[in-house]
Amino acid sequence: MASASSSTTPAAGSSRSNQDAELLPPIPKSNAILVIGMAGSGKSTLAGALSRHLEAEAAKRNPSAASSDPSASSSDASYLVNLDPAVSTLNYEPNVDIRDTVDYKRVMDEYNLGPNGGILTALNLFTTKFDQVMGILEGRSNEVDNIILDTPGQIEIFTWSASGTIITDSLASALPTCIAYVVDTPRTTAPATFMSNMLYACSIMYKTKLPFIIVFNKEDEQDAGFAREWMEDFEAFQEALNKGNATDQVDVGRGNPRARGAAGQEGEASYMNSLVNSMALLLEEFYNSIRAVSVSSLTGSGMPSFLSAVQEARQEYVDEYRPELEALRASRKQKQEERKKREVEKMMRDLRVKPSGKAAPKAATGARGGGGEVDDDDEEDPRITRMADRMRVPGYEGDGLIMEPDDDDVLLQTHGAAQTQAGQVPRRGGAQRGEGEDLASVGQRRREEQLARARLG
Image 1 (cartoon, rainbow, N blue to C red):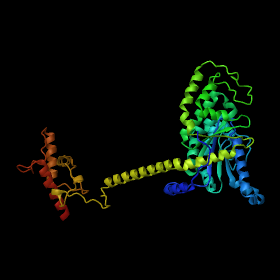
Image 2: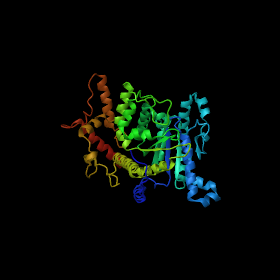
Image 3: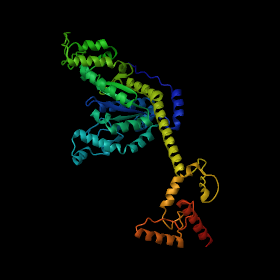
Image 4: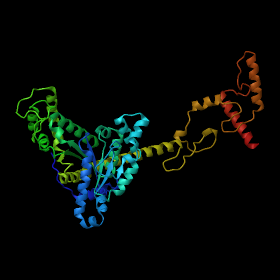
């Protein structure tokens, strides 16, 4: 399990930001902390306690400014965003509050929704304006140290919804962002509950791909040492599991009255025990790469360790997440340029424009007039030309010039109509056709004569 110690390297971070400046904005001063957790785990209480701790630390660093203007030091320490539209009271004053934009109860009434549907719809409506929120956060990103976002109580509404994904991705593309997954420590003394929290944390981490911190809250009520031991030592977790049913709480100290197995009796093997045992083996790699701290939102203990973990997560963002995001944007930009190039080439082909930008010359008509070379793309099949000649409308030469029929054409049409009435097959051009000439040659000669007379007249 990774330790929560600060190991930032400003030089590496600055060089990395210079390389990424082409497609991404420079890395700001602020850290974005997304507080996520099960209902009742203490997310809002943790956000308020963290804000008060940061304000106290800022006052210690600059006591003169705090004494002259207390609000100035507090405003520079943290920036709070509330994303829970259904919360009635908060133990902190949010700088941005979803309740100022969306009325949760009105959404329920208008759309005929239940509590969870109302929260989800309110969050979706708020997300449609989140670009304005991002503008506010980016404007303060070089003024405050930490931006804390308190998510709704129902974890699935934020983590598995489109609005939650949009908010998370928007933050991660602009600010060094980490996930703080809050765990209700007294409730996790049951192996099955502990494993459920770990699986949920693992799924969120791999979904967001962001730096991740597990925060064992309420350590004033239950010490989180047992949870750390279960994460680091599989045999210790297996021993606790064998004491009874996986859904029962284990006696891990402080005289838990609801605990079982204190006398060391062996529990009966069950499907739940076997399943939890197998999951613990699968999560060993997850435990080795995760950061875990224990805090108390009530007393404020453990906050320095949590902030050290946040700084460590910031460095991970700079070293790992930011380059991947830069590569993704570069790849997307390259694909867009290639698509534009293909569209331009297609348009040039359609307009018969050469790559140099000059119009391609018209193809010569050969025997029908003019000289010059014939473009390969403009050559016509002679069979198609002969077929078009046979199907041509009388009196239309095909070049936009309507020719008056001459006396020969009128006599030919009259003679053909008479032959048709007599039951004979009309012979086109029989009177004008010379020996050895076919119909196409007669038609070609006649058109040339008509065109010459038209130009002279």
